[in-house]
View 1 (cartoon, rainbow, N blue to C red):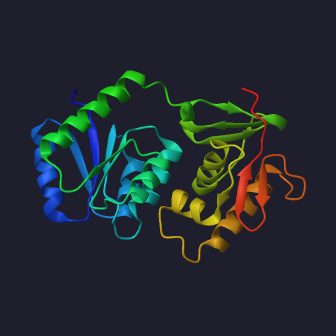
View 2: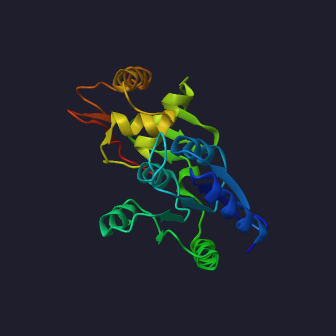
Length: 236
């Protein structure tokens, strides 16, 4: 283990969280504690973590949803810890991209062993994140995640931070249809109730700045009754 290992602990029970915090810090890890799903998603977007310890029963946003959003932007190990013993919950969590599932109650020794194993595996296979590399698409569109820029034929477009994040989300998962609810939770980091109009307005503004016609889209396609997908052809 190195002093750079930073763990995001997501647990709404303060007593359990304190036990885990104290133990992991004694083991030499840097640990950030989030007590709700939304808080954890905000922390993850704004920090750098090597592993996520994730409870499922959380206020504001459940652990399954947090796991889904983490997996859209990162390959860091996600270890679910839950009192749910049903196979359905385990399969759902692993299907969303979690790396492991540990059932409460568990021993601190077992948790430590699993954390170390996943961190070692992550370091061994970790490469440079593709999301940091500039991407070129058809018809002169280029996206530069490292400095949050979008250019069209070499000219930087004046996009809002939300428009950039929205475009990057769609472009990083080409041909996948995202619902408006998924987009709002991922980009805005808030519950999606009543958010449909907000997404519609932002997509309309983004398309106008891109010069992308909804009826003959080059990059952003409407998926009727669902949301949107990115259909641009990547050049390099």
